[in-house]
Length: 261
Image (cartoon, rainbow, N blue to C red):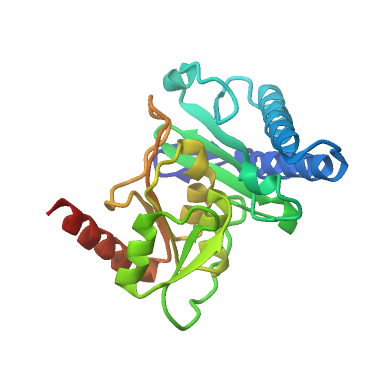
């Protein structure tokens, strides 16, 4: 049985596998965090390594014909000749993971099929939950008040600060990219805008889930996000509620226009 997506088809089992992999890797990371006796740097490195090993082993066993792009593995570019590519971030928010008991880190598992994201899951292990395309989340009604924008807790970028000032919006600090993007799904914020440089694995899974739930996803110029490119850098992303997306994009255009004038 298949579910048709924008540029092809994906097995229903792929949606379930994305969820299972994200949850299993998250469970491993929680167990490691609870038992590790070294310092924070060692915990971060071991978390990256072990989660990546688990995901690669499971994908080799479950989908041996598929290619994989992982933050923690060398890119051999074999994926460019594949019609099915798993894009994974074994530990999104490595910094936050090492700062026990912070919970704003995640595991990303996405599947790209024939030109488009087709399935995905973002596990938030320390929060005990996962959002995934096998059961797209229901986005709650927007809370009254000013727009709320997710922003990095430790490194708020100048661009988003300027955007918040233009929109008279509230900045809501939080950790990893996946946590910020999925905060739009939860209704914690109205939009996540990033323009400081990222890679495909930072946004693929959150974007897949957000799109499945009906949220707006795009580049900051409003163009479509594309994945499985030869260069995996994907420097900017917008995830927003539909009813505020054009307001946010319009403000971005104004700010960018002022900078280039």
